[in-house]
Length: 320
Picture 1 (cartoon, helix red, strand yellow):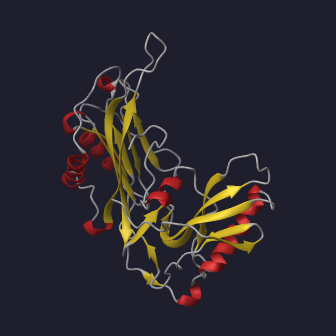
Picture 2 (cartoon, helix red, strand yellow; picture 1 turned 120 degrees about the horizontal axis):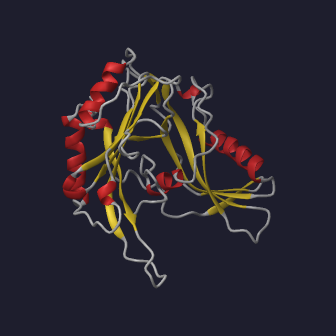
Picture 3 (cartoon, one colour; picture 1 turned 90 degrees about the vertical axis):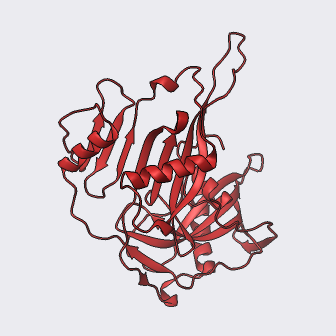
């Protein structure tokens, strides 16, 4: 689901220090809050065993917890059949055998709307869905496609193998980005669910932030400017393409508000093409948790550009 499209045009104005921003309406920062996660007891290996039986029937093993508190399983029969369960956070992911999708097999894939229905139904049926259904939003519908090289050396036909549904969290109309608060469901032939990744924890009541606790947009922009120029060089020029207020779930202890600046950076060497860069700055003057938000990986650019609230999985392999 597309969220808000932030800006349709940019009118450049110089702010100094090589920084250029679009002439745009200020983002709203009133009503921002901090969310803590509900405290739950750590899961047990019995829960991991139940997940193995539930999602990978026919597989069996004596599971063990690793030093990082994550239970990992890889089938002896197929390296693509896996399960991972974080005992502390409850994060769960699994992937089923993919062998029959290899080669020239062309699965009969459901359409986008039908795929969303299948994914949503699967999450509910298997008690993976959030307690508050209003928080769950479809952020992206993509897919996995493959091709081959013909004997002539030319590329063969593109074969769509999977439909990928990415769900993300939305809180009072504000998207949540980051590693947590998302589901990814891959759907194959005739609606078969091939894999699921769940990173989701339920929230406690939010703590409202006073206006004095929040940076102004200009202050956040100045921080972003300094951070970008320190990485790319003082002679670089930075154009702010879009600005967005979002919440950030780093799969840590809290969900906190942030400023997300999508920028284009022209390096000192004018012969080099501009660099697309997303800078994320904590919105709180004194963040309750250090999220180390200096930049996002390149896939995050698609989040800000499209207004989606999550980063599509395997962005280098997906098709829209």
